[in-house]
Length: 313
Image (cartoon, rainbow, N blue to C red):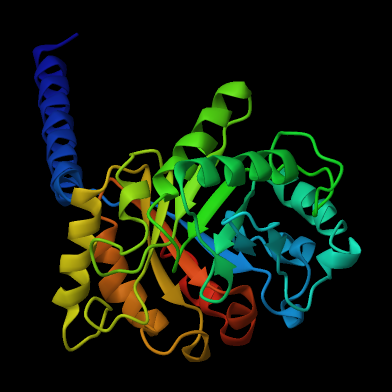
């Protein structure tokens, strides 16, 4: 090989190396912001059960919009009462008419969607009078909705994934209920625990239970509470509340709970574009971020809220 060829090849290689380094530097600079502002992906959670016009549970999971569904509500329990589930216009449990919901539960689970039973709600007759009362309710939930055995399972033989605490009344014994339900996880299938506290911190009814550190999911209700809801005029009220919840409570994941339409709550509705452009970029910076909870399926059908935020959660 001549000296000219050697020199030419060396010059070409040097030029290629310089070009490679320049391109690598550009890529690094483009990725640099992401290294310091990580964003976490989430899922959409929905409540189902309080309006016969929202379609079946099978229909709900077949939409592909939701990864967790809360069946609401077991609205009567505690104080020695026989627990009762209320699924509004869907079925009548008094006549054993809700057995068909079990097929919907199994369909959801076959798609990897978790289904939880929500206890409490804004209207009902429930409360716990003692630790013993809490343990009794936990045993009922295990035997009638979870992995236990009973001849009177309201939703048939489907085994739900866990229990959601939407507690808005009652005594201070929900911590005992959470501990007892958590103990049942040791018998095999995990019992997931979730809670839907009001956004003012600490929650009046759930603080004791949440302080156990046993909850997998917490979907904070940022509605019907103007002092901590998101508004474009005062976004810091929401941000301060979110930071308080995620820093003060030990739980697996936290979710932003919002009404799926203006009709779903007295106040607190967040325009989908505001949620995408202002709320989500803020909360997704937290490693505890889990996603968005919508109340409820009926209102989501009317507004298309979950479809409008899809891809941003």
